[in-house]
Amino acid sequence: MIDFKELLKEHGIPPSLQRIKILEYLHDFNTHPTADVIYQALMNEMPTLSKTTVYNTLKAFAEKGVIVELSLFENEVRYEYNTTPHIHFKCIKCNIIYDISESFECLKNKEIEGHKVLEHHIYLKGICKNCRDSEE
Ligand SMILES: [Zn+2]
Ligand SMILES: [Zn+2]
Image (cartoon, rainbow, N blue to C red; front, side, top):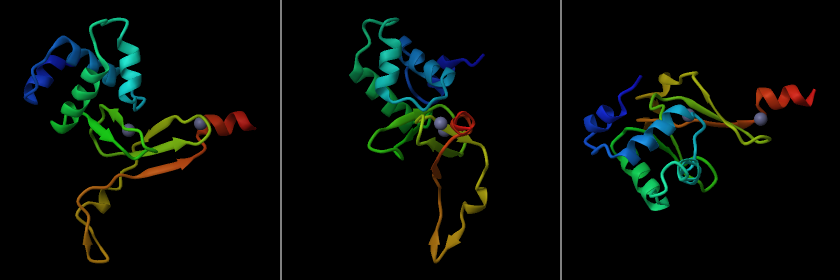
């Protein structure tokens, strides 16, 4: 069991109940949700929660390195709890984004054609395993 309250404190964020709930959601649902999805999921449980709070909270979390902000996807920002570098695979049929744990650590600090790589965000598109299975 992760102590989300402590985790936020460690990152210098005052742990309000709403902040803890948002972080908990990201931890429990590894689906790379948008701020809207998180708001829809939590609004019944927390009627005082506003969309703006969700947006601002996610921004603050990402700035402090608690979560990762992904803006790789067509004009929508998504968030995830998993801060270890990994590859994203988006299925063009079901729109699910999968985490692929294959690492391209070899790219880190590498020089390519004179450019020095500091970080990398790899984004693959295709047809996922489940969609391929149901096609057959
Ligand atoms: Zn799919
Ligand atoms: Zn991911």
